[in-house]
Length: 381
Length: 83
Image (cartoon, rainbow over all chains, first blue to last red; front, side, top):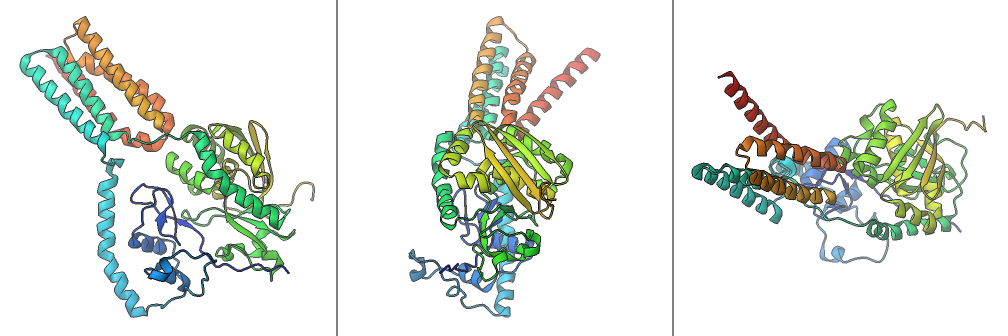
């Protein structure tokens, strides 16, 4: 008997974390993916308003403060029906929203002051301020004494101090560490794919809003119907879709490269959803090669049927090699994280569902072939 | 991005060394020191530029300070020549 449990989940969305500035946060967890800091309720509520979606009953259940029993980890899958907790009356909601206005403004103002010039005050910044003061004092002393050459060194100290203040200190990670951190998660998806055994092509779903996280639908059964006929856009709440309708049977996953794309967008200060089609390849190359250096080169072509691109490995070449070796199903059917990030970018730019026809991973190159949903393959037509 | 810190350290050493060299040569004008540091800064910035927009955004105030100082030197020189 094959029974697929219906899990009602909410699609992740994004909001800027006030602590670290990372753009993606799991709405059901309310904590930043990157720094683990709790996101203020008011910011989350603001996000709800922006995405014009009201929290459902089960979301309200998640929002409420956990009781002692709920705080304990449960070994079972969460039963969302239990979480549909007391829904507040309209009067309560109004009162709450009215109360939330002031804290939201305060937080926005505080975020503004903390994020100005992106300075986070630490030991390095204190040292910088010391060097600035020292440099200024040396300049002053040289002017008083009349030794100009001393002023040169004072100026050097002043400039180094400025750089210490404005260049944020960040830890460096070796590619091996990134690989080790990511691989187990991908291996789990690999096991899931192997267990369910779908031999179908993944469909990267259209992104409707700049806050949406790119999702990929992997049908469990061969399905001739193009995804737009399946109405998947309305079904973005489902992780595993009910088997009652075979057309809608499949896995709805967050794209493996969604986080990488978010980082690319953050670093290049461009949201791919705002780009024109003709700018796609240039921007993809700029983001992957220059901003993040995850690829050494990106070449591609855009046709009526779809998009093809070829990515030359960069800093994360070990990761794609590991993924290809340890999670071949993930690599070939969903794409490795690097390919997937590029596919997500394509989906955002072209604003259309895209079927991953082929993802080939060679020792130094990745080749990806995407087809626009609803366009027949050249062989089939 | 960690390489950016290395670049800052490299730049710090470079301007200290060049400052000492200029001192040894006996350069007395502060403008010369300033312009040498500025040139070195932009050379290092070219390296840092590939580390992403967020770092470049952080460095904008430093660049602004540098350019204001440079503009001040240029204006002062022009006034000197005109007078």
